[in-house]
Length: 351
Ligand SMILES: Cc1cc2nc3c(=O)[nH]c(=O)nc-3n(C[C@H](O)[C@H](O)[C@H](O)COP(=O)(O)O)c2cc1C
Image 1 (cartoon, rainbow, N blue to C red):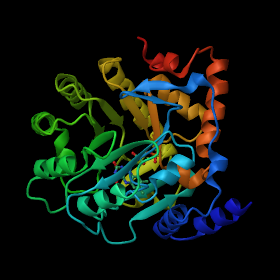
Image 2 (cartoon, rainbow, N blue to C red; image 1 turned 180 degrees about the vertical axis):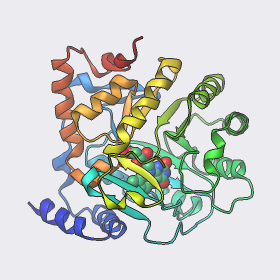
Image 3 (cartoon, protein in one colour; image 1 turned 45 degrees about the horizontal axis):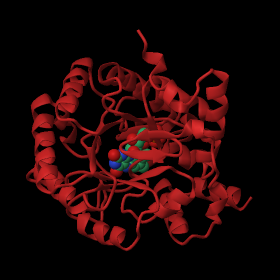
Image 4 (tube, rainbow, N blue to C red; image 1 turned 180 degrees about the horizontal axis):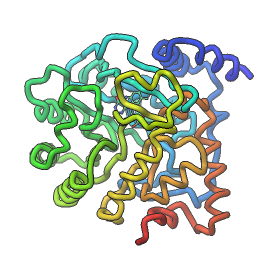
């Protein structure tokens, strides 16, 4: 009841203001968050990235940009949380307004452009709060960086002993030229440098790469080959898209930026399937884009994802989203005759 009142007020407010209020709310522990922590069937457990996840649903990057609320996110029942994107130096991001709800489409367009407190400040925030769950840190370069590779290396060094994985974000559409890093030679150079840095620091932290949905088959095959060659630990598919389907209803569809939510689901699943066919079980896929209920979660898993992340569905459906997805997922797995979540991974990809 209280949640419904708060939620309807938040949905009337400017999206970025609503987000900031939600962050303050979670930071101050106003809700009896333990209510959201449920035990689920062992069928949802999955062993990946050297960890046993109780269920597949994690929080996608962008919600907790400055690592302020990850322990509340675990209390909401998420099995892992990815904070960031964090940049080396503090930066304000793009001018406001820069987040737009497409309510009719259960989608969002954002052009935030990595507003960040910067890696030093975020490090000191994390040092004060031991993570009570699996923590990933998503890193990216500053807008006016003179060397994007140096920026990633600095962030990697700053964070690698503080978290379970580092996610290298080359896929935001809102930082000029960032997505050029999907080109074969550039991504090769970046990943080799990161792996060297990892060796030099004797770091055990896993390395993940987050990829754009706006790539073609040649990009996919080149990227997959490089991921395998460099023995990258996981791939996050996908970030937001700059494409707009003809089916979008909201007048906000004209806004510039990255599209997320239900209208991203099909685009992201298509990319997941293409990668899964090449990567098979050698590199796990973390599937993100439009996960909002048990059906959409299972579609992503059957496309090839072993873990899931969401952001937009938390905005539209509220804090009970993880429990709802997992309850529905257990029923669907049984209905479709899968022994476990693991058993369903990639089942839509058999040729
Ligand atoms: C407002 C907003 C901000 C985001 N910021 C980031 C970010 O900083 N770094 C990043 O890798 N992805 C960011 N994302 C993308 C999400 O992590 C996710 O890939 C995308 O939203 C698709 O998932 P969804 O449909 O569940 O929202 C952002 C998404 C939204 C809606």
